[in-house]
Length: 306
Image 1 (spheres, helix red, strand yellow):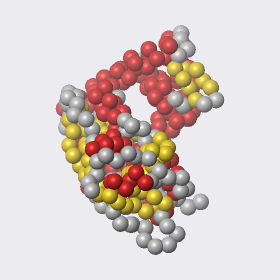
Image 2 (cartoon, rainbow, N blue to C red):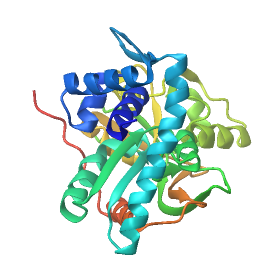
Image 3 (cartoon, helix red, strand yellow):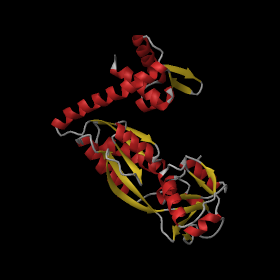
Image 4 (tube, rainbow, N blue to C red):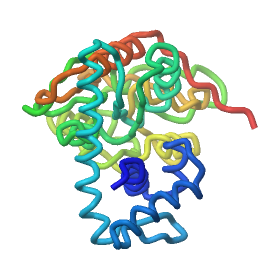
């Protein structure tokens, strides 16, 4: 079994798309298709069903995917172990980022790898904090950033950043864009656009509102932070987010924020790594890089000109 073909299959399965996997692997899509087809021919099994929306796993594909992830992880660990002997930051690392800050950190991370870690390979995956915690615990991701994680024996977590939660609304046509603080009890008067209940900031908000006897007016549930911000800008409703999400959106000039007070709601961003997997020179360098990027002054993302 060709490891390169196996990696191509796993990336297509993870992303559900040949085109997306081709971009991640930096190869032409026809070449990627040939690699997966060669693997299917070698195994005499159909692994993926191609359709207009992407690619889905067959039963055989699902079984191979489980093996493939573990095989590639072991190969990566073997390469890292060899690098450890030379104290070199080499190998492959997968970083999990929450969507609220993924856009702000992706480019600096890639630039940091190009400049300081040219012999290492990087994969960035985006997901909710609960998903990233699961990925790190299972070995699918090596390191990540999480908001308000639950205590898990499989994770080693370090607090990096404390941020106040704010009511986010469409900016007025005129006047101040940063407005007066909003007491939590008044949040019931606003139709809110919130992510699903298991999302970290939603859980924090829901718990504090319950303790304060405040019944939230949840008008819409939307998982995507960029989609929530688009809806707020369109004046469909209001959001509860932290400053990082507003900065990363590239639409800060269209938004106004009001810190929530009485009580003040604080979201904490943690650096998370596996508590069972030994650290390597590469993961230690990545941890330092992530810490430096989080602690650096935030520069709002500019909206691209059309």
